[in-house]
Image (cartoon, rainbow, N blue to C red; front, side):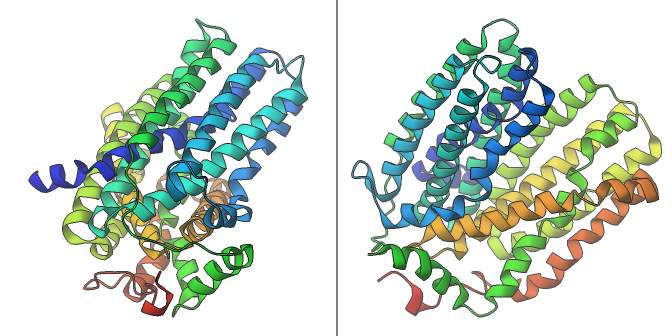
Length: 418
């Protein structure tokens, strides 16, 4: 307990709770919450579907990440100046979107939603870079856990809480409140400490674009490492893609799914990420990756058990809790691992590249799951999904050896900041 208090009591770690919240708040406001608003305004379903394109900035943020490595806004240092600027732009855009009318002004609504997504993706770039730059090696796990918790809480507020509020307040007021939350969250940016390492940023845009790639691919096994990043959480991604259809197909109501899978699942994830951060601080990133690889894969078998017993509430709660706790642990370790790979001269660009690959897996892993369930049934599907962990486990000795203290492809001294 003393070790937990020490690592989670650090100012560097605590501030990431608020910055993670700021990172997670805009996502639902241009996604599920905006869709609910458009549906209630009787906007054509075809147009609502087209609006999913406003999320494109999240998938291509690597394109402008070098700008945030190359240039600084002279307010609060190399990273915090950018964070504060994006938070101001987000607050203004969210409030402006609340004043628009999806039915009467759909294209203005689309432009404002796209602006929010662009500013949000930009904030994510620089927040991820700041997190990797500011944390000490032993704080990486706790920092990853704390920021994930802030992110998840924000998604709950801008998603579920916003929908509940919309039954009692106008959408303009709902979005106005979300904008005010973003403004209030700027306090965490002002209180956050500056990274202690003195890093010389790229001097030209050519350096900002090419040097991060050269710095990464100069390492031994750099290409294979990208494969490892894509497959480490494959089993978790396969299982998670079908959780809601699975629970509904077993006969649980939407209220059951919302209460247990979303609300209780969030609490379980928070517990898992906190526990994961504490374990990482104690035994290191590499050993945590080994343990959590097996744990998060075996947790899929809890859904196999639920599929075999059928509609059973205690088993459902246990399965959802186990899957989210184990998934939270794995996420904390993996984010800490990604942060440890980055050269601090180019953290924004390199982390944007690595995290984009992780997102690609999450999207592609869901494609075959419907065919798998149709052909083999729920129980066998979740049993087979555990095999998705094998590629990552087989690569662990190469990139995260059990007795190693740092990633096997850590930058060589010649690639470190001078």
